[in-house]
Length: 136
Image 1 (cartoon, rainbow, N blue to C red):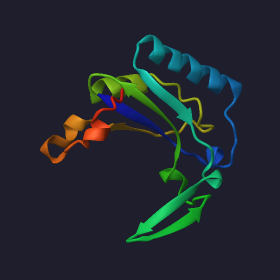
Image 2 (image 1 turned 120 degrees about the vertical axis):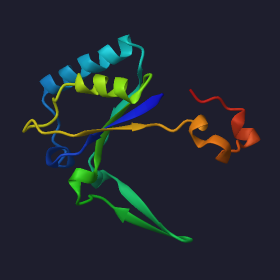
Image 3 (image 1 turned 60 degrees about the vertical axis):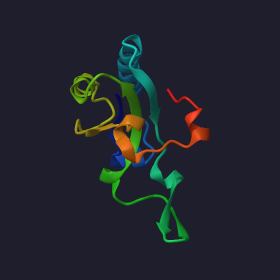
Image 4 (image 1 turned 180 degrees about the vertical axis):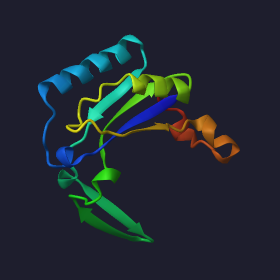
């Protein structure tokens, strides 16, 4: 099972304030543990929402909304994707992560299962052209 670990944005991350070198080092060490365990598939930080945009869909109409976005607590600051056997195992790995990027010690991380073809059951009919492509 693959899980996305979603790090929530803070006022500091949205302001473009970079973490201290010690925080980067602590996260680097943690990510190294994940690599050694063979479970880390991806790990990335995201730029502040001021450097992004949203596209709102309404029927055939598309509206572009430029960042920044106001609800910081709803924004994603970074993510990792790990492959483990269960949600419980993902939780155990996340609990080992350093709380290094929050200046006040308060942080929230969300864990979400990445959907696999099997999760869609009979509702999924693969496109024969796409089915030829194997995604890891």
